[in-house]
Length: 137
Image (cartoon, rainbow, N blue to C red; front, side, top):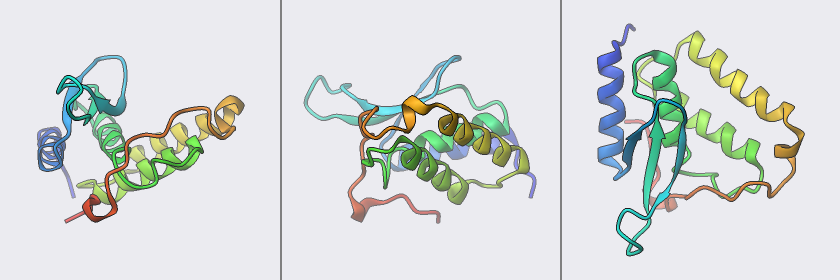
């Protein structure tokens, strides 16, 4: 299956719109978090991603969406990262070998960083209630 970058970009927008996730584009970083865009009334899910211009950027965007879901309350960073990549792989239009290499590289980078492997080093990400989980259609 050959998916165009335009289709990848549209897929990210569709997933975010369907799940109430705000997208902010940044050339330098990727992140997912709760934003205070409602001035304290409600914390809302938000991802910060590079513009989707390649399959790798698409995979990273899916990974960040994956952080807004199950298993993100774990104190173990590696558990959160692994599940975010698992979600990305389950929800991608077409998972490629290059995407898998990048996911593997990212996970290995966490394993190499001893300071991150200790439990409780990073606060947990927001978790969507179990009855509202993201699922591939």
